[in-house]
Image (tube, rainbow over the protein chains, first blue to last red):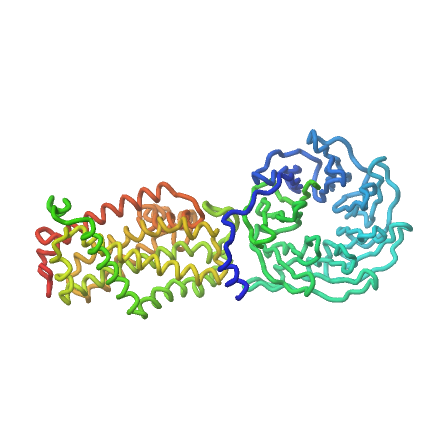
Length: 322
Length: 281
């Protein structure tokens, strides 16, 4: 209340300062396309035809290419940002879904949903380096800030697998709630967050002890508990604020990442799934699968400022590094 | 309206006009301040709609983005402009009620014996009522802000001209109606035949595309309802935009209602013929 009164008395800029011109790429799972969004005009500037069922999408660390996992084509396609054409593929396993790069951007770890494996790929050589057998329906992928531990969550086994990147062996498993979808480390390596879609929770894990230390629950007045399905997680660089996509609840939960308390729910489109920050962290873009659009959140004001129509069933999103 | 009534009469300076306006607006302001119940009820009515009615419909909307909104909104955000217009609608009718009261009590005679033109006196009365309604709307917006109804900050400024125009239109309509009411008791009819139909057959509570789904005829009637355009004018202005069609309709209706009210209050043509109790003619 007092915070609001303080805001009311503060001179607040009428319009937010214009965003730096970044480019966001959104994978549209059903229309088999990638929509390119300009973050200055907030419009779709191009739609790129890709393989079948594009989901996981990420810029390479050098910002020159976009990798997109096309599950039904059992591969990862490489889009050249300069020409916006598909120029090559990477040899994943069957039905690749989400992936993560190492800090140097040389190695790619891919969760293959139908094969219960994580594939390790040398990006430059386009060569498969190996595979790690994990639980059933692997999906969420995260790499620890020091690059030593790779996390994979398996949807049906309900576990977060800790994989040693040097030995490529599972070194620990932590049981989480039903259908874990996504994993995210705090940048200081103090916490690992794993979302559970069916469980409706975020499990907080101590990465050193490899034990669950707490849980975040969500409650939205007027919504059934089953409708609240946490999926994507975005955390600010300072580790103070986290955003959690709540799927069919059509809300993004804002979480104080220190106290683990939910501070606000932001209304977005239907079945909100994944998200990406602009490099300056002014904006957070989230994909709304059922309403076929992307909502833009002003991170400082904690307000949804715009929603942009994209292709059918938008799933993943990535924004060009600075 | 007679020609004499329209022409500013020679012999009166601008200062005298200003003194007259000041007197009427000040009296209306004082009356409003002294009637705390009126202020509270003016605030409570829309808040009941916002806190109770909208709570039940919270999840109903939010599946379609319509201008001026640029993203998904909750139902309470949608109905806020409608409730702002409702405040002005009730205020317009309340002013008409007070004019009937003034006429019954004989205060109207005091006002209308002023040597200044009748239309000017009525316009000042209208302006005073509008100013009061604008204050009520801002008080409502302040409370609504704590309920997470947060339009863009510039919207609080850009909505002011829209509020003035819609306030004038609804006030003039109230004035026109009051000219036809001979006794206070008849005011209940105004509620049933004017306020409720105007409010419910508008875009205040539901977007017109939704009304269209249920009844195309009703949607058509809603589009003909000047109150719909007052709501849309306020809705767009609150988000720093102009709805030109609504602006034209509200502006046009305001002028027509004002002229009609001035004509109706002309003793030789309007209410003078009715000869109300304690009448001013």
